Length: 102
Image (cartoon, rainbow, N blue to C red):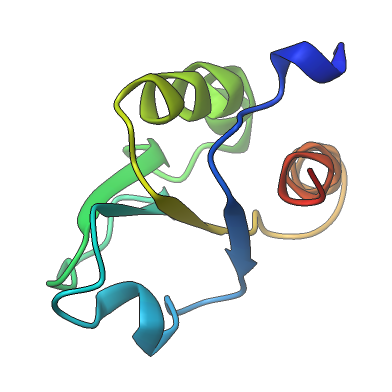
């Protein structure tokens, strides 16, 4: 991917649970992206996910389209959950790390 394809919105990655900063009220317009649809979504930020069922291949197809959509929507910051490690998950995390490093 070209650097121009990477989102302009600041991204921060997390492992399993979004940090309290992402969910605190009154912190501006922000989004939390989960790898898969959460059983009980958190409050305080708008929630999104790469795959409804947790399918790694589906998530890989959705990473950049979702990040571009959130970028265009004008969020101040986006927190993104890392994919499960290994294989395609590792490739997704590499892409996410590059986007977060901008």
